[in-house]
Length: 148
Image 1 (cartoon, rainbow, N blue to C red):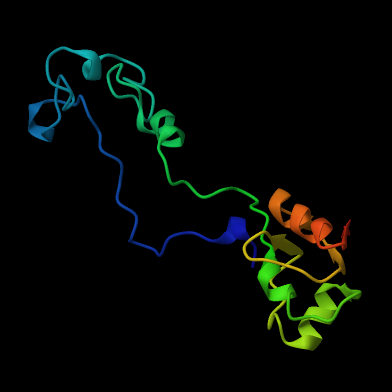
Image 2: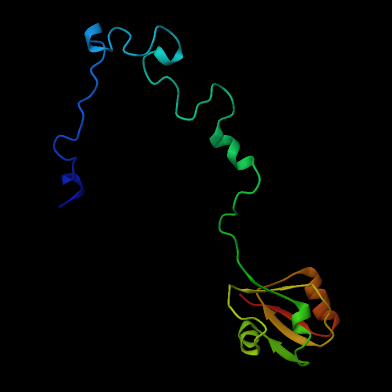
């Protein structure tokens, strides 16, 4: 069986409306379109979505707020305050943080945020850093390395 073989069940398809065949048919002369006006003219009256010159909905929508970001980057975020309890000169990676139990799930690449204080020198390897996080890590004598 192929897609072109599929059809409606016998007897389920209604016959098309025959318009302009006299008043007995119920759709004579004007064919249900009334006497005059834009919607009574031959051809397609208006395109789909046309609102009489008002900016149509499909053009208004993207201007509104709170639409989801398409292809949004999702990071596993961590504040520098969580790194303060680590020993000095430790190499901080996603794997080492999972082993230490500081983070519990890998929700994507690691991003370090700048909330809190840090006073131990660490070598931090992450996908992204905020400016304040980078400044705090380097001020404590550590290094920031961006990994792909």
